Length: 112
Image: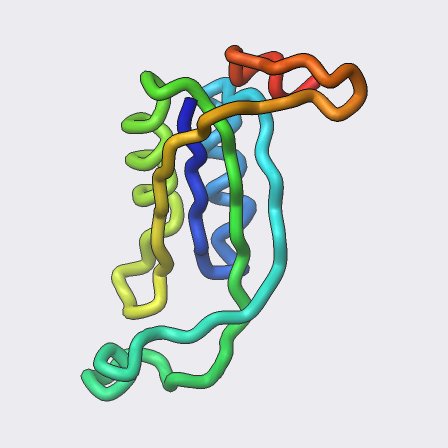
C-alpha cells in the first residue's frame, strides 16, 4: 500500500476531488493550511513568498493505483504557475482499524 499526499492550491480542490472520484478511490482526507512557494520561484516572477492558502489531500491506496492517481492530481491541479503544489508518495507499512484493531491489507477496507 502507498500513501499519496498532495499539496495543492485551495481553489483547485473541487477539480482534483472530482477527477479522483472518477478513479473510484477508496477515500481521502482533506486538510486546510497555508504554505509558500520557494524564494527562488518568487524572485523569478512567481507569487510572493507570503503564506498562501493551501489544501493537503491524503489517500492510502494500492500500489497499482499510484501512477493514475498522481497523473490525475497533476492534470487537475496544474495552473502552470509557481506554487501549483507537490505530490508525495510513500510506503505504508501497516493500516489498523481503530474500531476493531484488525490490520488491513486492502485500501478499500481501510476506509470503512
